[in-house]
Amino acid sequence: MATSEHEIRELVARHRINYRVTPEWGPDAHWHQQKIGFQIELYGVVADESTSADPPPLDTDVTNPAHDALDAVASFAFGNGNKDVMMTVDPYRAELVREPSLNAWGVELVGHVLHNGDVRRPADAAQARYVAEVKQRLSKIGVHER
Image (cartoon, helix red, strand yellow):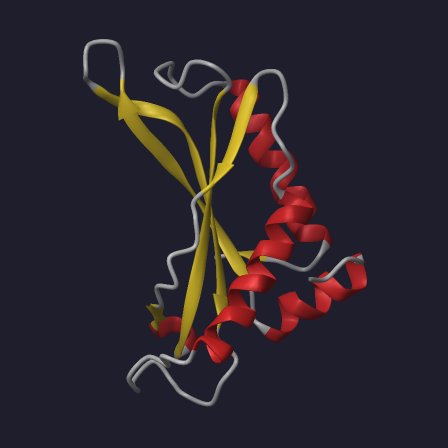
């Protein structure tokens, strides 16, 4: 796995890693849906010659490096949370996603920014600040928001 910032930047370029931030929805104490946090979705292109019009590559030797790159980026940028915010990452399921705008197949890694200790509270400024910090770290290594 990449250890230096320079190595991570190379992975970002090779796999055209980008991200988007979306609301995390969940129930309040009365089971009404509300925004309870944020999802930070990292996306990385599988580095092979296929396009999104082709069937997805099934060879894990082709797909795993893209996920490993996302994992390195997440380790650098996501952090571990703090006293107010909990940061979790979904387990990798080896699923490929089609990205028509890049004409390529890719993998996703999703991080969740939630309240530490009480996920049923509405999203607040502490979570928004944490997301802003993650976005700064992503920008530092060349990851752009889509």
